[in-house]
Image 1: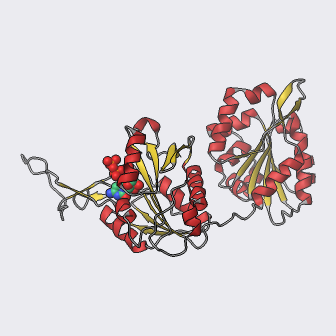
Image 2: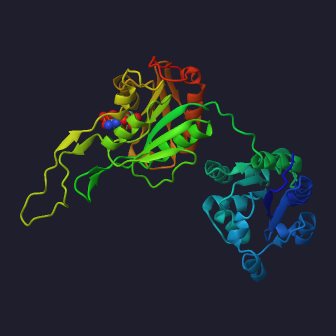
Image 3: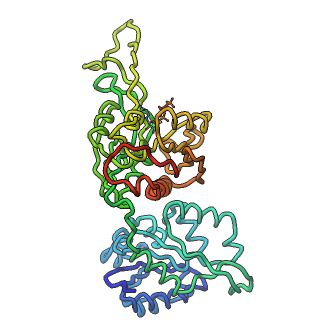
Length: 419
Ligand code: CTP
């Protein structure tokens, strides 16, 4: 496979396996991949800058404060000039620094400053690898999206046996190739239109105050992105959020529940609708046109609340415009399953994605989610996953659903209920 035009920044840390980095550079150059190297101080005990430079045919970077390096290419630029950062061998120490966000040398600084994908190939003594500290660091890094080529098993330089050997260079090359030339994703949702709601709604009290909730929009936005990745045309109706718009998605920004309902109706027909927004259940009757003032001696204003329309229930109501698959969320702090099942029936949804949003779970506004997918056929509980991963799983479940696969157009027939 050709890696022409691609560039890898190879970080070589201190370990007996550093010699394998030389062979990896040779394989990368043979695949026409540009290689720059960062050699840590400890790495320099095992291989020399000169051998890395000769094989990579590029300058080797060693020190954070080298003036020449800084004038030619600062560490920030160095961290972003490559398509992929590869750490091979990755020592327990460097992995711990990455997990902890430390930046006390060029390698760790570049890894903290990069906006490019990172692949690590750990190599260390078996006990160091199996130590709970190293395993916890690896779990943290993987959760953040760092790619890993795990160490192999075998006799080690330290006369012990077990996992810890650096993967062989051809295996590292294959991992690099699949990251730099990923196989095109299948597009099972091509030709389908998906409607997604996300974020909170803001219900005005007066021009400067509003009722809201802690929803960040992360989960809904990730679902919109995942559906688009599978080829769907996606309309995302979003309340006020600070997360960026997902790529390749049409975004309608709204403030209130009434605006969200109007935008959803305007987006129909849709084949699939996912209601991930945390819609405010109530709005203030007669929001003040001017800022409410505190008058000396006067009682605080009494707010009269009106119920907001239920957007999910109104779009899921039987009729010619009903999407074939309607997925709701249930954010609960008590009786998760019972409440979620009741919402499935009450709102005429096909699936409910239930999650416990009690403050101690850290889910509301956080980066991870623990969900249970409830359908007429049963309940599927998923492990704690990054919200992106929940979104990708949900999108592929949607793509596998018969009603979505078979449907073209809108005849209002009941949706299939299998997950
Ligand atoms: N929902 C909606 N419109 C509303 C309220 C909720 O579309 N006015 C949707 C949410 O997007 C979610 C589902 O309904 O998909 C359940 O929302 P949730 O906040 O869990 O429940 P509520 O219906 O608000 O009920 P309660 O507050 O009693 O839990």
